[in-house]
Image (cartoon, rainbow, N blue to C red; front, side, top):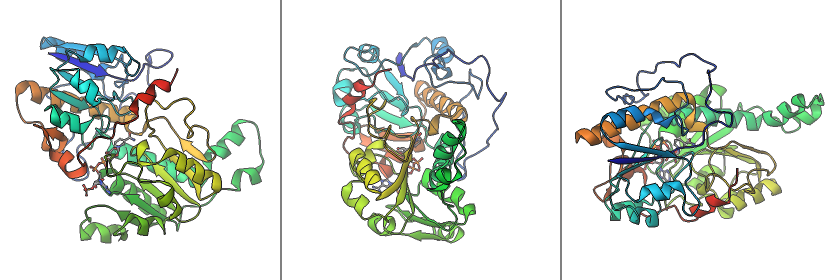
Length: 398
Ligand code: NDP
């Protein structure tokens, strides 16, 4: 079989010769008891770069020993790109949300042998799920592999934005010492109202991690959390998003992108937020209307916007979020720390082992199966596609 793997570029100066840490902590299970990826074996050292082209998700030996062909490229967007050329006779495509190969209907229809699209990470909105259903292409992702990595990033972003860390660091770095400049936008998070849109694996973990800061915690989700969790975290549940955003100083967005959530944060919803609130969005860029965010930052309706997700990716060089005031954006990194890479590389290997052995892929990993939303997909996504506009990724130049 032919496996096409679309990964981000290697570091500018080549693969690292060594890493800051010689090993990463061992984690035995996720908080809800779900086990970590458990392939029969791995051919990589956890803690090394695996998500870039030369890292190959540690898959080459495994696949070639079984007689399969592995093609790895980062060239994914332009007309006639390497990924499009290789896709036409590929059986399996692997892509990462950080550097998504947008599997549009046109691309899916160009690949008659395609059987499965694997997301090395979480969030399969870069695949036209409707087209995948129509063409019986299964879609799977490595549920939970980087949820807690993202929750850590959210905490970092909430605190750094509310305290205005980026500004203070820039002053120190440039040789300055004007304390008034450094603190004129700096607050404590203690006592603030923090709300999450969706309390799934990331949303709930972010709330748990913010609890020790003595904040008031809120959530909005389609399904209510168990009573015991609401009590443990002293959570306020909101029946509507409007009700939650009205009272929150910080809103963190943690739902998947699907037709129901596309441009959820538009001018109208933002105008109902508490004046001067902050948004942290590590879910998907397209959940927010980018220009509405920029307008709200400009007017002061929002005090800050941070996150690591953009649309499309890579973001065009002139994307308005790159240089709007009071932004704390990073490229899409929260779910691809070296720690997370080890988990999702192992998860992809587990999925491939199941596929080749014709055994069941974990129910939790399924998004589309046999032409229908299945497993996690049936729980968290709605039918349709959210890939429209992805061709704008060609506007990015290195
Ligand atoms: P989960 O599936 O555990 O949680 C998703 C939650 O979103 C579920 O509780 C689901 O609710 C809820 N939800 C779905 N649609 C809506 C809606 N319309 N309104 C309110 N809530 C909704 O996934 P994770 O927490 O692990 O990940 C969430 C998302 O975060 C991913 O889909 C991905 O887009 C993004 N992500 C980003 C990463 C990054 O690197 N920045 C890495 C990993 C994920 P219910 O199930 O109750 O219907």
